[in-house]
Length: 315
Image (cartoon, rainbow, N blue to C red):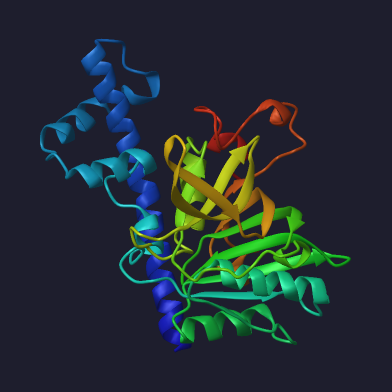
């Protein structure tokens, strides 16, 4: 089992390295093609390779639309390591495990129970003395797709880690403004229907990555589901809201009523690692928030068209 996991990870890392190499080649091809189409001078660093690259362009076939879309996003030739990460997303229902940091408070235990109810097909595990390696090996043995770990500070939940298995990514969020169902009087019961998802004001490439990380925690809902989970972006903070809705005949015709069932909280992304939690120290950093940079306070990474500059934020 250990040898198989090591072999699969080596194969994944090899494919990712090949993707990086193909991305650099494809970027040169795109720049040369753009210069030829617009009849502009070829950039200095491409002049030496321009003739060989131009010959390669003549023999390239047009790829399928989905491959072109992925190749444009990643800068590669039509394949991405994201295909390995979310290969069966939407085909099979995700299997999510929710746990806490060690020695959790009673309030954190209650929040973990409520989060388990929010995510269908999720299971909650008491952390006990299990370390991260033990948790992840148990998750892989039981075909768990995502591991959620909730952290706290003095009884207040303040951190959420979403680790996608078996290859990653691992996303780190700050958690704030937690209002649990436990704190709302007469809130009623929570439906177990698969919820519809709403991602509001998520327009950048980084926002698409975050959307995938959160979206694939939930199974595909049925059309008649009356449960809605919303991630609304406001100043790079995701406001989580959970509602039930019902339609009724009002004075002005068919009307819609929203009923909040909780919990509610805010998520602030601060890092994405290309790997699982036990390899976090050695894994590449796909994106990280740099709050100490002079321009960070006026930049928006999830909603502006130019919000995610990989050169400024990658390690």
